Amino acid sequence: MTAVADYLQVHTKDNVVVALKNYASGARISFSKEEILLKQSVETGHKIAVRPIKRGENVVKYGYPIGQATEDIAVGDWVHTHNVQTNLSGTLTYEYKPKKVEFGQKQTDRTFQGYVRANGDIGIRNEIWVINTVGCINKTCETIAKTANDLYRGENIDGIYHYPHLFGCSQLGDDLHHTQKILSNLVHHPNAAAILVMGLGCENNYIDFFKEVLGDYDENRVQFIEVQKVDDEIEEGLEAMEELVAYAKSFKRQPVSISKLKVGLKCGGSDGFSGITGNPLLGAFSDRLIAYGGSTVLTETPELFGAEQILMERAKDEQVFQKVVDMVNGFKEYFLKHDQNVYENPSPGNKKGGITTLEEKSLGNVQKGGFAPVVDVLDYGGRMKESGLTLLEGPGNDLVSVTALAASGAHIVLFTTGRGTPFGGPVPTVKISTNTALYEKKKRWIDFNAGQLVEGKDKEELTDEFFNYIIKLASGEVKANNEKYGFKEISIFKDGVIL
Image (cartoon, rainbow, N blue to C red; front, side, top):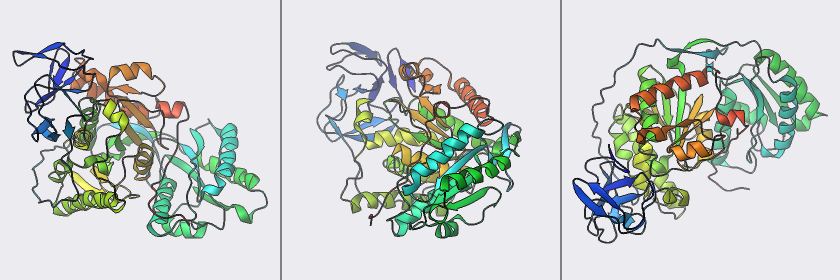
């Protein structure tokens, strides 16, 4: 990556550079000892041609094609959606071509202050969650959680939260099972010291059926109330909450090996710097955590399209490779089943930030996974089983994918953004800005500034700072903005009819 004055060439093979400031039409830049006249105005994060690109020829960024020119592009032209189109199409056939990954292990000599649960799982927060099996009782659960939070928060209780959702009734087959898996995984999540599960009584996802998906649980930790069976569900809920609070208070922070930490990787509201600053920083973090024996999980399946082979060649074996193939082609078939193009992305906000095609977005996205081998691939609603880098099936939608990452077992979700967003998931959701302007503008949203990487900050030094910050976050010494300001919510993937 070569930064020269106010533009950046990401890879020496690239035939475009990225503007690091706004350029007016008629401005000039020096590239490879030549002076280039800019023929249009170019905003920061957008691309400028530094070599002639013929119609039908690939536009190259990150050293890979990000699409093809729809017209001849001259040196100095603005390169974007008006003169570039995707190369993507439907499902593909892939060949297993593993690339040897040199990835050493560090001594596990770092710790954080966590909570060791009765079953040996590790939590980084001591919260109590109210999980409802069906959306009909959202307000009932909200009332119980708010009342209990006012009564009990503090005294070793980090908060009592309810996560409303729309589902649990009028669903069938896999669609209902998706809801059950996400909710059951949240019940099992170790950031919650205790859980109150509430059902209505007549829904598809009634409590006894939900328990079949939930599996084994600790009766001291999880209590159930079926609202239609009791006289006063608020009173019953608060009585149950008193017992759950007493149980939760029995846990104290203690030193835990960093190898137990599980972190989700996500980007949203991306811009032209996402693949240059924020996502590479997450990749460096992921590699370091995995070297200590920890785990990271990467999702957003549609935002792997065009870059999937980078991950396929890092699959730890042929079985994992085939799982990646099945995940990618399976999600493309989901698009095609609904008569949608597999490349119908990036979003308008992404395009305004400088991302032209899905390939460009995907090539930036996969950098969050660093260089570690891919050890496993999970279906939507799956839970992490192995240390290392795991892929999780899921859409690109921010709320749905962050919820899926939390449900997979992630203690923390790291979320890079160039445009900004206030929301957060049920676990600490750390916002990393890809540019300094966003960091300075949205202090209540953004937790860490990766934009420093194009301002002369050494990547290793910034990775050290970020890694230490995440250890402090896991230890409860600091909180993410989504925790401070109450931005904690869930969203569940919908794929099926509603009765």
